[in-house]
Figure (tube, one colour):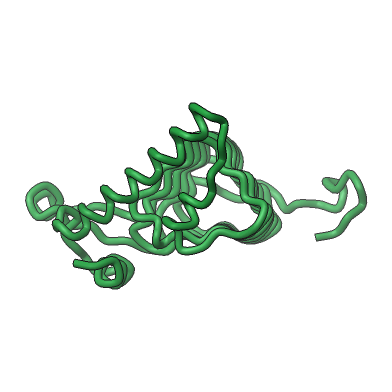
Length: 198
């Protein structure tokens, strides 16, 4: 099974066998490339984005990704420009994961496009998984330890507080936090220290 076939299958939103040989082979290759990238960062302080450019769907200019970045397939991940990703980002890109421009991602953030079947037989014996896309808007800041679940969109300029579990869409221009994550307040004019507008 080639990449395009696997991509079509997992991005359909329909249940699929997570242990299919074709799925496992592509997953293994992605893990290998992530380990190669992380080894260079950790051992030589060398941020070789060409490794990730070959793995991800797209990656913009001025992107900085700290060590211990992990993804499941890679081909479903699109990252904009001027993005800073701190240590230990995990992306289970069983569907499209889009990260906009000017995004800040703190340490130990997870984005999980997959969900296992609720039925125990389908989950444990048939290895059934289904997926939904994730979208992180421009200039979003995800605090440390944030977990973004499948099907979620976070609107532009929004801040997600540390430790939050984002189970539903969060609108633009707000501060949100909690488990489950909820809007606390809008971002206000008074939050702007230098007078710039967004």
